[in-house]
Length: 247
Image (cartoon, rainbow, N blue to C red; front, side, top):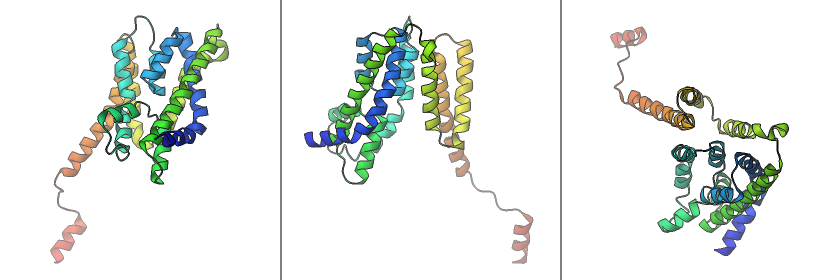
């Protein structure tokens, strides 16, 4: 097990550098929002999800919108349901407690590295866990270093740090684009978020936009399934009728 964890940690070191750099941006933003070093560390260890933590930091303002934050994090992290399902072959024979402990340290990066190794017959839960420990460590170091740097910057707008949140999520959005099928859900999410931001207090626009964007593909799939289930009408085109008559 130890050897597998070491192998997984080493396999994830190349992506660890980018994870640390990404985390440093979060740390600087957290410092500007007034989060303490201990609060950021607790967030890293309890949540350990980059995009969700960026949203939490952006929403961090007194009075703390606890319900909105929880719902936003749940929506953003729904992809882990699919990630967990894809890891089912590795979890065969493991208890629920073991699965939960390992899944807590699963990130997009060590999942991708593990699945690549699994396809070549070289991945175990120890490999996955080692990668998770590696990434959680470098992520925490990056965020805490960024926090210290951010606390020293009196005017973040001079260095465009106030734009960092927008830049990070723009990059994340572009990386998630899958093609034309995303156009309608993305437009719907944007419109719902704009309307909710205009008429509702707090950060509910994040939750409403996220839920609305997620529901659109589900409704499209349901509509398509019902349409395919309808009985097909007979072909009444002129060519078809002439063919039938000549028989």
